[in-house]
Length: 374
Ligand SMILES: *Cc1c(COP(=O)(O)O)cnc(C)c1O
Image (cartoon, rainbow, N blue to C red; front, side):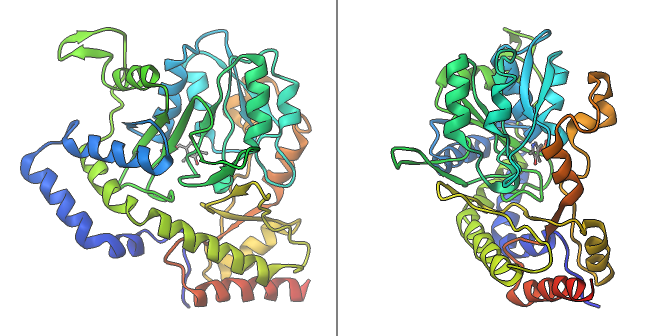
């Protein structure tokens, strides 16, 4: 039985092998492991890719969010608006800083932070932290306008959205992570731009903020042994930067292939069973980190796919407000009903640049097969 993984990291390495091996060997030969020149080179090219003034490489996507909030002065007693339907790493840094995540319900069609739900908590929060979930930008104009009116910064969790685009009301196009004060990226291996371990970056057009984050990530240091603030050990590793620079060259092409695959899934699965397929509003171009559909048959369909060797997934099965880790906040089922419905019904099909048309067809026919029987 042929198996189809949810992401295919060996295939990704095979595509980049020559360039990556040479880049790694060059770092090894000079042993420039900490803040070698590859870090600065990657930061420059990633900032250019995003259309941002500055990029600061950091140790992970979680560190990117943590350092961003720390640089904005978020701390004990503060609240930060976070969507309830996301990976836990969006909220963890809020808690680590002694602040409290204020969970916000999501939009029924896209799963992204719902601007109307945000309105209800805005008088309390010190920052707004939406997630471009699955690679689709959130409704940035509505969310950004609300944050601006409340006088609080917008920090984008763009960990799944490298290169995703949003069309502003004046027709200009911005890339994910550059609309707000700060944009946070993860280069976890399975992301659209993935390292060979943990890595991340913050992008911003605010030079002072970029410098503050750079300093915080490197022990708060001004010189080798002078420390202006209490910082962190959260730098981007030189070896990871070297890998990322090579893979960045094919990111746009990989995103195009993901969009092509998403279009094929959409046309082949339209009208099948009770499936609700991902939408793409006219003002946004997603990069399909994940292809997530909704169905009331989620668990049975998942089992049916897995029995055929197809690694479908669930992103994410428990909304953050109902996670055991957040039990102290006192939420109950029913508090954020749309996020809870997403958690119950969402199912991710395999999508990655190396997925072949034939593999996609195998997944599609297995989905058809399930609904032919129910
Ligand atoms: C991956 C991810 C993160 C965390 O990134 P790491 O690099 O794993 O720390 C944060 N937010 C979202 C939405 C993610 O998908």
